[in-house]
Image: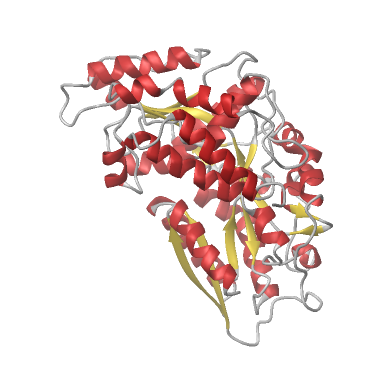
Length: 441
């Protein structure tokens, strides 16, 4: 059965993201503005635009299909496209930003929008509103996640939340049920160990999960579940090194015993993950990743479950999954805004992407999704319906400099997995790095 699916969580998600987004962003100051008045996109001359995003082959094929639709509607506009894995994407953007050669339109993340906007590298899209860009269908509080000092530097495309993604085919092979809902982090770790033991004789070997320790968002989620605040008003960590040590040490036995999918194999299969190559039964990640993971795994027999709980319960939160921004140096601001508008608002684009970038922020795209029972889109929308009562925390909006300290957290996580640093060394090095890169340092 195929049905058109609408969602009723927009206000709930937007409220969770809420006015804190506008406050946090407006406190940063800076940002570039458009040069000249916005005008309808020219049709009497050829226009070239560049569009970049991070992601995998599945996301790339969806973007290419959406771009083809856009070029069909605007035959005088040619859009060149490029994508990279997450790490390579931001390395390339850093190089381009330094040389003032950022692409015309770029996929933007909440972790980096402060950095790029305050360094005058993003176009203020507010002048395009009502001309080439419509934002009226996006909830105002969600839209505020891309606002800064009175300007609009990113347009949110969708929202998501964290979850346990599991590979049912692998669990069937080893004879283990998926994790139970409402389990604690320790119980989740015990489940990982059980699956790894059961999959030890499989060929290739099946591990319970990938190592989640080196993901900053997951540490933040765990902190919130302990009743702690991730960052203070000064933009610096509001937790202690001891909190980070505790987070790392709690999973050290799993690394010592070879329970997690090994880091050496993880690096070998990049940009795929252990779950996608059929060697890890679970991974904690954003719910919209289910589409790409299913495509990479070659199976739709993947599922989503709520996160493990802490002292404060689940305390999950909604997050803008990604935004679209334009470069401050684009020579075609009107066409760049029109491309963003098309990707965010066009119903056919909603059909193309489904929930692969999260649940769409615009009702027209949500309404256009044709969702088959049991499909990936159905699983994501159903998961967000079911998990709403567990989303009890406000979005912990990243502070200025978050993107670089997130990357450092990931790097140290890999060093930890290789056994090159201890928990104490990880915490000390990350705190030193954070103090040098956060809070306007």
